[in-house]
Image (cartoon, rainbow, N blue to C red; front, side, top):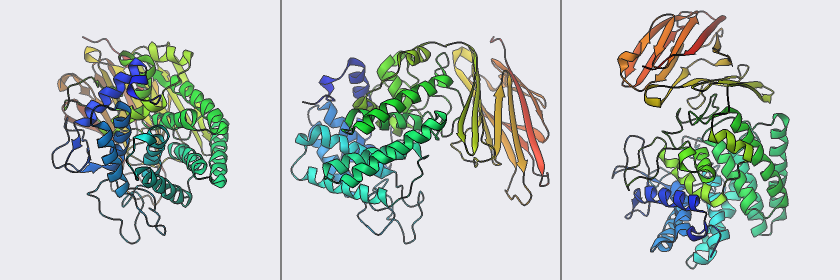
Length: 508
C-alpha cells in the first residue's frame, strides 16, 4: 500500500480523484486502449476523435491510485501503449518525446518543432512515469518496469540534447526533477548534478524579482506548482526539496496578489492563458485550490457530474486533477485567507523581469478587476498572451470579461479606474491588417450592450474610451461582442493609444 492510493488520501483528495477519473473514464476507447481527445464543443469526445497519448499516461497513474476492480489491468495496458508511441531516434531532435496521438504522422525530414512534434511531452509523460515507478512498481506486469526504465533514459537523452532557457519555467522545473530522479535510479551522478545545478539556476532567476518568467498564468503557474510538488514530494535530493518548498511558497504568495476570491479568478495580465473565466475552463491552479480549500472556494468548473456530462473549456487539463492529488498542495495560511474571501481594494505593481523590463499592474475592487502588462515592446503577439483584461460582476452575479485581441505588439498599464494601452506602427512593418479588437463576454441579452464612439455600456460596467485610430465597428455572436478599431492607413512612426476609464454601474 502506498501513500497516494485512494484509501490513504484525505477526503477532498479522494473526492477530486474520483470525480476526475469518472470524467476521464467517459473518454476511454476500449478498442484503442487510450483516451479520446476531448473538445470544448461537446461534453463527450466524438466517436471519431483522435486519441491523447499524454493524457492517457496520466490516466494510467490515476487508475493505479484509484485501484478499483480492473483498474490495474487497464493501467498496465495503457502504459504499454503509451510507451509504444515514444520516439527512439537518437539522431533526431524529437528523440525521447512521444507522439501527441496515434493518428499523428511521423515527423518528416527536416521536421519543425511544434508543427511536427512536441518536445515537452518528454517532461510531462516522464514525470508521470516517475511516480508510477516510485509508488506502484509492484503493480506492474512483468517486463513493464524495464520498458519504463528504457523510456526514461531516452527522455533524458532527448532533453539533454535540447537547449532550454531557464526562463521556460514549467518545462525546466520538470526537467530538473527528471534529471535527478533518473540520475539516481541509474547511478548517473552527472545527471543528478546537472539537475541540482539547474534547480539552483531556476531559483536564482526567480530570486531576482520574486517572479517566474511565465507570469500569472492560470494554467502554467499551476503546472509550476505540480512540478515543484514533484520536487517536494517525490525527490530524494535535499537541494530540490529545499528549493522546491521555497519557490512553491513564493509562487502562492505571488498568485495571491492578483487573486479575487469574490470573482473566483486571477486578475490579468496573463502571460499564457487558454480562457478568461477559471470557473468555465479547467486550470491546474483550480485543482490545487480545490485540494486545500474545497469545492466551494475553488475556481474550477463543476466536476461532480454524471459520466459523460462534463461541460467546460480546455477539458484535457482534467489530467491535472490526478497530478494535483499525487503531489498535494501546500498553501500558506495567509494566502488561504486571500483565496477564501476578497481581501479589499488594492493596486498591484510587480516587476516580472528587469531585462527586458516587464511590469504587471492591476487594480482590484469588490466587483471589478483590471490587469495589464508593459513589456517594453518585447512581447510578440500571441493568442495565449493577454496583456489587457477586465473582469466584473454582471447579470445574475456571473463574471463578465473583456480582453484585448491585437495583431500589433502593444503594452499596457493600469491605475485606479484607468487602463492605458499603447502601440506603435514601425517603418517597414507589414501585417495584413493593423487591428485592435476588444472582445467582451457578457451574460444576458445582446441588446443590453450599447457601443458608441466614446463610450461602451455593459450590464454592471461602463467604459469611457479615447483613442487616435478609426472605429469602432461592432459585431455580436450571442454573449460575445467584438469592438474593432483599425490603424490600416497609418504610416510608419505612428503611435497608437487607448485610454479606457472603467466604472461599475448598478445592475437592474
